[in-house]
Image (cartoon, rainbow, N blue to C red; front, side):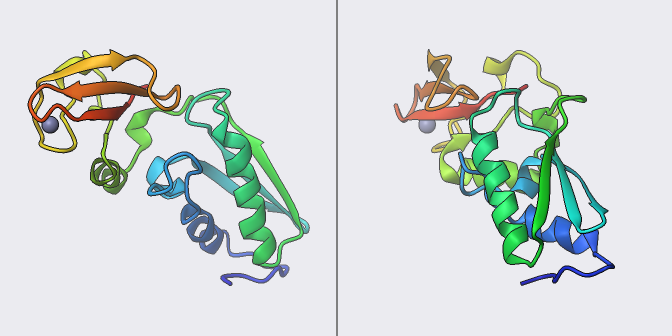
Length: 163
Ligand SMILES: [Zn+2]
């Protein structure tokens, strides 16, 4: 394990430890890829982790918080508090470039890049790269995704919505 609780806690090491925790919803993505880890601070024996959920009320947040606690407990920290920070709100702009690539490889079209223009203009089929796509449902397997079908290879795919 990375760190053992002591008077001098290396928060950088904790960022690395927690950054490698996987997103409960899309296990190929880490918290680092998503950019949801905002702050890690130490108050006495307590480790306070601040996260910004991908959107307010995301059901994955509970699981994510539990995973953060588990990772820190296994590293020797007994007192862990996970705080939510809702402002500024998370945006898909915070997702790392490697996170976008992992999504595509996983078969989910990543959010259209930095500025969120008209979404349908920039979404590509993760299977064949074709941009002739059709929306099937605004809500895919979860509320943060929409379901599309490629008009070329006819494969349906999830699109991680731009927010
Ligand atoms: Zn396709």
